[in-house]
Length: 335
Image 1 (cartoon, rainbow, N blue to C red):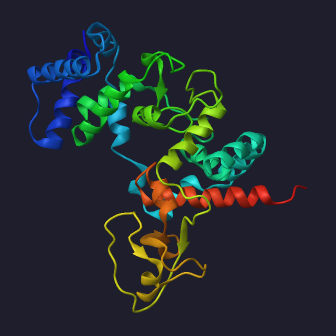
Image 2: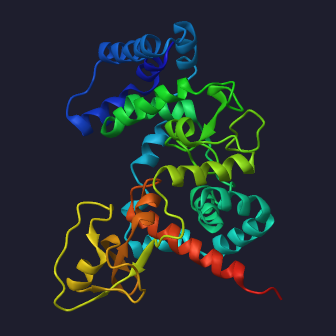
Image 3: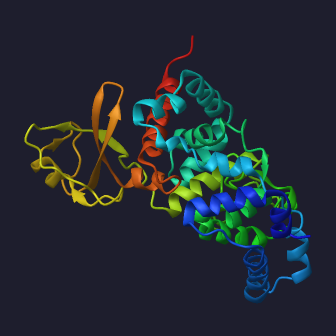
């Protein structure tokens, strides 16, 4: 029995309620079965996979209501004053310093090769999985099937990721497809890579013929660095600067996080920073609700690159500030 048949049998009420809430029309059993067959047909037709293997793997999937519950309450819904304390903590800083020092040679080699600071790589691991402690308790297969077929708001995205999961070559992965573990969204390993990111950016840095994002620190760290480089990381570039806003500053509503204004233009409009940079450096701005009131930040290309990991500006700023704190703490002389 395949995923949709099980979903109808065991979770029909939940699925129908979810679909009704999202679209106002609940799919019937025939629509579910047709979607299942279409998914399998597309995989077989477009990628020359064996139909029996696709169906056998789908048959192992299990619907998880807790996945739907978790994805419906992301931390990014919090204001900055509440979001920052979740990630920028003394414990996370101390653990980041310890990880940085314990793996100094590896991280330095990767930093030299890719141009991404070691503390930024370490910070991603800290924010994503608390330095590998919390890599996810769900089978990736369960997470992606649940979201691909029972979460209408983003089902197209998750169907693409489910397809990519089937396309990951098991000869390169350290575990079979139905044994891969990850987050409720299907993200894998210390760096929380979705299947498409594994396919496009993960690196076998230890040279053992496998891409192991769970147990190989060389693969884990190099994959994060490679992801950043592929998304435009500028070696030595600025990430974000707190702005002093003039009383008569021009109101700006940027369309997104991609830098769109020359720094000189922003300065003329009333957004000033103390750090001296090329006046033609492109930047944009974000305004957040901080613990002491409104905060305005000018953000640059490297901030935008961080946001390719997670589109929330809160995430990018938390990564930036935690990396700064880890670097500062690591630079202090020992006792």
